[in-house]
Image (cartoon, rainbow, N blue to C red; front, side):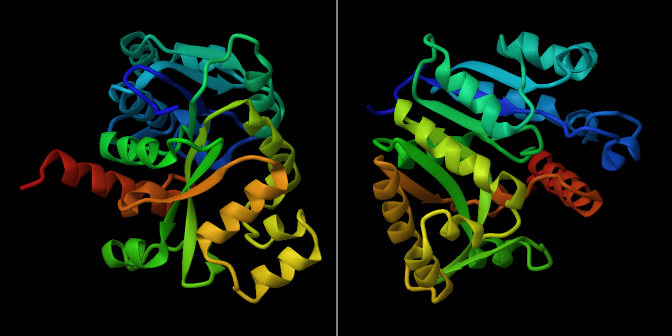
Length: 267
């Protein structure tokens, strides 16, 4: 069913790993999602961007430490403005999403993003939802040339396929309950997210060989994975280079703040 006005539930992943987050600590906070970006907590940027899209009807933020998030003034203001809700998360992303999909009251489709996806904006969301329409699962990606044309010094992890190379963007679409089948795969590769080839090994040696030899286009790869899982899967190339620029390290933060400054002063 087409993602019509007020039909999409947004999920923002704002979890944290056990132990001290050195990146967060360097910026005077204990949670990465509270690192100040252009004057306010990064999570607040994402909540505002998501809630501004007309297709979004309800926003949920999943995190382990929801009390600390709620006590941050930037986040509290964003939650109030968006009428968003904080939900306790599980130990891993896959487990947290499995709990969401297992909820009998869940309403599809779902759009999933992350608290460090600070550059997310309305054109990105609109493009992604339009292109994801009709799928059970969709994943946003950015082609290498698209990113490097705008940000030639940006360093990303690339999946090399027939015809091009792609970097993942933290934007996902779950169109139906069939998406639950993907979460088992997600759990298997969750600890190896920087190893693009890991996804091929889950489906056996033949797919691994085809992947290594780059005999698949990205559409063919999505189709094969969907067929294996019994669902319709799509890869959605994003025209916006910024879709794959999240805030993982100091260099990313500097770049993101520079981009946000240009957005505020386009002239």
